Length: 133
Image (cartoon, rainbow, N blue to C red; front, side):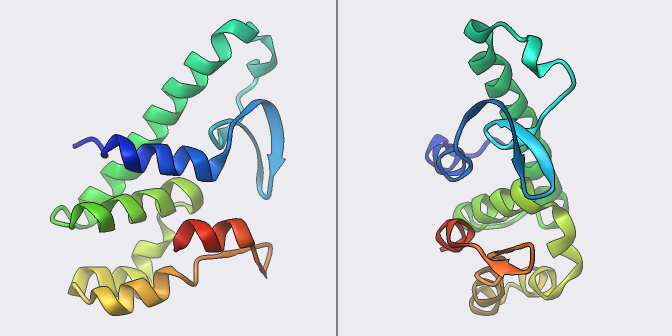
């Protein structure tokens, strides 16, 4: 099941857009925060947006599938937030206290833990803080 375009737009806004590879904490990223690929610099400028949009759709689809396989019956907003987290940081949350709270349907506890996923390099990142809120 696809995410609502409103959620996709919010994820894109949080990620920002880069037509060329840039260092992004743990990897070089391009487009909407997807891992830069060898040869990205050879994509004609007029085709980059379409290539990066497809890459974003592919990766957000994988993140959503991971969330759905973990818990297929999530409310839409929870599903979107966890898909954004998975896209941004991977599925490690599924094996943590956040995953336990989600499995239990304890949304207050899940929200409290979710908001703690706002660090990069061991430091609070204001962009991640805003994204998680």
